[in-house]
Image (cartoon, rainbow, N blue to C red; front, side):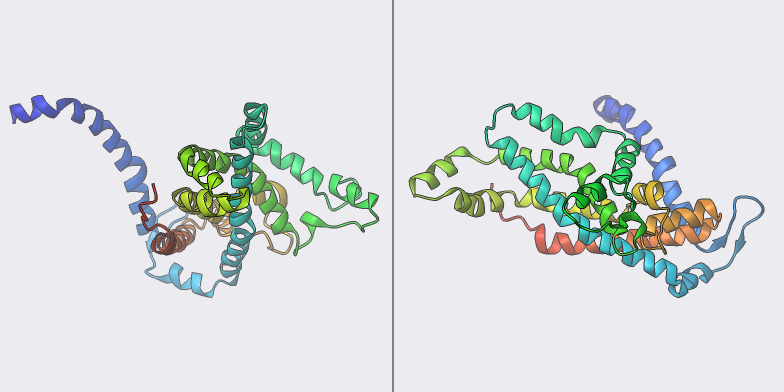
Length: 292
């Protein structure tokens, strides 16, 4: 034991505090929230065991089902455009354009800017009145005024646009790192063979970025199912619950109505959905093709 301690003592010294932190702030809340799904607990007063009552409520809760559907639709609006815009911005930066560092900073600026500020500007731009910037611009071309955030059919897409703007800069960094890792000799050989820019992108760049595609797809999928702040700041889940996402509905149940047990059920439903989608993506897109 003494020899073992002499050899690994430094590891234990650093490992034990981290493990204690992990157990207290990760494992315990996870386990407690699972137990909470079978209880009726509102912080104040004693908790009572109710079994699967809250789980049964979820399967009968039409608003919870609508919230899940809204989240799926938001993901459709959000994931592919975020990946595509991030890749385009990375290609621009990687192309050798002059002042590339300046443009990189401009593209990344929304990421480091307070979301409250960005959301405030976005909300002003997409006001459903004549004072909104976008409606003013549409008026220049004779297009009638749009309701945007006040329209049940448009509000979710507008929120998706805000998230795309906010996240595309970080997606750009991931793709830029991937582009930097592709050997330049491949492009030189392709040029000798007479390949044009589009063919080099489609045959070399895009396939060799597969690990980046997979990673970005996973994190954008997870973030799309966790969307909350834009709905909270701009729409409050409206109009007509059209922007009520699963996390926003979870927040309302847990912190507005103090239905903490039911909110815990919603959190596990969200966990299960994200886990299943991630496993599907891993199965079909995450295979190692030994392309590097």
